[in-house]
Length: 365
Image 1 (cartoon, rainbow, N blue to C red):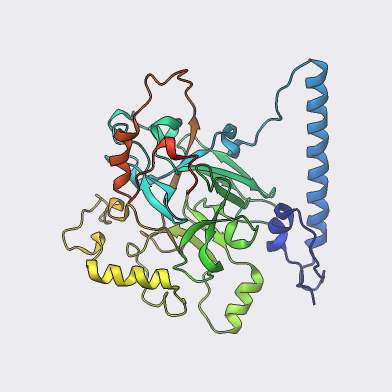
Image 2: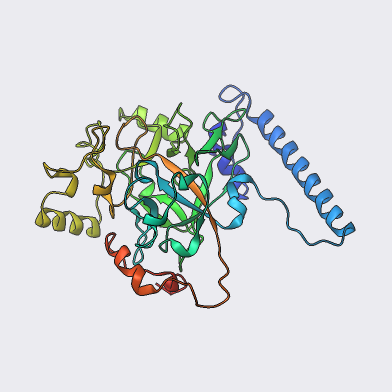
């Protein structure tokens, strides 16, 4: 029997482009058909505007493309920067490891760039040639309920919609390398905290659809996934803890007790091997008694540089990472003069276990 259609499933329905077999039950979800009609009206209005725009361009003998949404950042992608690190000697970003699918907290720039950054650089734009490979993201497509706007501080401002308090749900796609176009993904659709983040072919399910915090459900600037209602009910029926909003964060920095998160997590051989290696290496940098602290008393986020991002409750203060969104610009040098050498970039990559350079972005991995 098909699943009863609920409002929280509308973004998946909208973004997938597929046909779904779903039941409509007015007793369960009385407004669902009304919102489907409203979304269809919005889509018809959008198509009408696009048709008029193309007609005007043809009349003026112009070949301009359709205007992009603000969150599309002019089509060049965006650098997603950890807020707490923008003033550090080495700002950290959301990025991908070169040799596998892991999503890490890693240096944003080539080694010689951070000293040249101006105050409040995160409110402007960055030159793509100055950043390290595999840190470039494309936001979208996004569902249409609500809105997203980049504000003057560099945050992505989320405006709730008619039925979605979390605003638009978006795919985040890696913009560099052989895996370009693949989606940010919660590994194995894990519906409990502690799910590791990686890149995976896009499938348009809840674990690849992300919202942006505005200080209500999630902290400002946070990136979070929302559990579908039917999964919440399944967990409740099994008497399991329910964390409906899972934010991107790091392990071992927050206030929550993380000891129980691995109890129901079946580990594959690779994860077991990594755990054994960790045991041999000893304590993590953040577990050292003399670990660096920020003025607010939290351990420096630099201690997690090169570590894989994981999900954490959006209420887990300290573990949740808040982000700035800095658009890219591309400089046309015309020749090789002025370009930064790959050798200069490689040492900056070593801190995150990589040696990728801009020349490697098209390399088959």
